[in-house]
Amino acid sequence: MHIFKFFKRLYSSSKTNPKICIVGGGPAGFYAAQHLIKKLKNVQVDIYEKLPVPFGLVRFGVAPDHPEVKNVINTFSKTAESEQVNFIGNVNVGEDVSIKQLKDAYHIVLLTYGADKSKTFGIPGENLKNVISARNIVGWYNGTPWNSNLDMDLSGESVAVLGQGNVAIDVARILLSPIDELSKTDITQHALEKLSNSKIKKVYLIGRRGPLQAAFTIKELREMLKLKNCNTVWRKDDFSGVSELVSSLARPKKRISELMLNSLNQMGTSGSKTFYPIFFRSPLEILGDQVVEKILLGVNRLEGTDFLSSKAVMTEKREEIPCNLVITSIGYKSHQIDKDIPFDNSKGVAINENSKIEKGFYTSGWLATGPTGVILTTMGNAFGTANLILNDIEKEGLAVTLKPGFEEIEKILKVKNTQLVLWKDWLKIDKYEKLKGKHVGKPREKIIDVQEMLKVAS
Image (cartoon, rainbow, N blue to C red; front, side, top):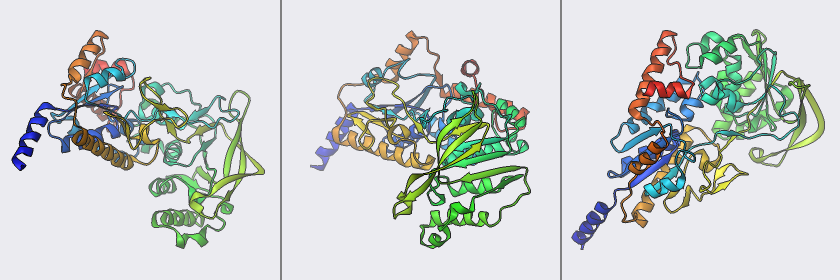
């Protein structure tokens, strides 16, 4: 009986050499590929990426002064160098090739193309000049090609950042950081030049709930508190009742609350720049004649017995804060790149049930879950999706028909004269950027123009 099973498995596995296509060369895509090739020796994984360069949010989202977070690139590179994996850059799925064509060519299609649009408040004045999304600013200082010419005026003294997540605090920190510190990072040259002429002295970080509900993590807050030449000024009223609750908090929340309370009791005045975290405020209107001049905030109170799930309820009180720049940072959302992707436009995610869209069609990362968590969260989600795919292959089997995979897609792309950037071509870009960076004392100087990337790659 066991011998029969062995030969049956041997025969069926010889029939199916799974070809898997991943759309999106960021963390979710690379982690899924890593797990798939580790668990399935006869699988072929092709990663398609819109840009000529890999790594998605690790390259374009992680703050330039957080190089340690980018070390994960070493793991992704090992995955890309496997014989079982192909990286195929400069392919815009939905335009250069359709989802249907990918489904026809591969046994399995996994979408991991992330979230590249910004959520908005929908308040009056959001279209005024110098109201900019945090996502665009992050792309500007990190080298996203379409953000390189961002029209942002830093000649004013005061900035209001709406949102209190890690992206919001990253942007606040970059705006307040000393230039000599930033000049040692891989921040783009155009951002470095503009920031060196910045007149910004005050950054307000505004959230609708209280200190116990703040979304930033302890690492990011600690960095802000240690920032050279910058004071952190809290509002004591925002912390009413917080110290009484600290002992009952779970450890991560307890540590960050203690850090805030300690900082509250040690506020200094020595720096020339100031960071103002403000709680219990919701933006109602951005005011100004053509350009931002101030922001109108509604004052909130919390309702609910459980402080973690407490809701912000607006009172009749109002507050105005003068500012010359407003940065919105309330999250990202995905978009539908192809009509054959079932999509929830209100949530900005691909419609899926625990990562599965339909048989042979999956999604992972922020496209599946919405923009939650850090890179470690994305890793867990991607590994889980890869396990689901492996279980489905084991359970359902694959169609007996052989699939052509990249061989077929390459023909389609050749007809369209699409210049493909393979892993070996990316290595040329990588080498070029590091060499350019070395000349100016930086780890790398990113190419920000797609045509220049393609030129170096070829």
